[in-house]
Length: 252
Picture 1: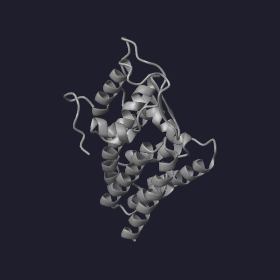
Picture 2: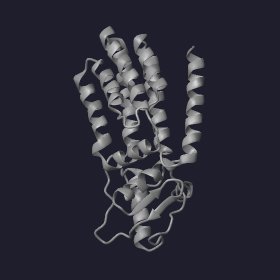
Picture 3: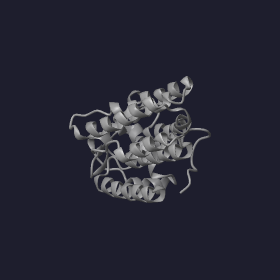
Picture 4: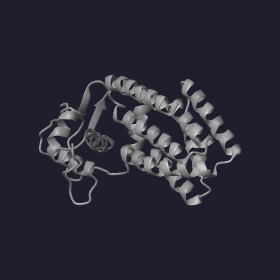
């Protein structure tokens, strides 16, 4: 399904959010009414479901709608004349940027990384596993893992750029909201994916490091897409495990 409607160079989800905002203002969806399912909205606007998800999150941040897990998206209030959706960096945009930047960062790091840095990155993989088992755990080790790889490139600009992308996870309201939904849905960093990146770095294999990082962040995008859909979370995990198994067999 193509990403085809839009206003000039505007990010597509913003156009969808504005259309939804206009329909709310016109009374098409009264307060308390459930919006059509994402799949229906995607067909209506001829866009992808991630684009619809981003548009809904932009309206959710403004308090226009409420997403209820396992039930749907409901109208909380109708917009006034002064209301405009606030657009920041969405979680999907952010992760797509990370996929591009961090894939190349991992490839460069594989040619530069020292044994001491490998040992530190390996320690951080263990720390990710420990945090995953802690009901009150954070994702500090996950951030430290990715920034350690960025430092191993020996390029300060790359490290600063990737650190800025990680900062946006908490400073952009749209990104912070969806990552919080993922945490509530018990979606956590996958140790096997981080281990694959580690092993590619240990082998000083740029192509493998790039592929492992891109595979990992592709899975993050999948997890974010299904972060508010409990049934599909299980399906996504099953599919992700199948992909990891195929990847493991292909590289054995």
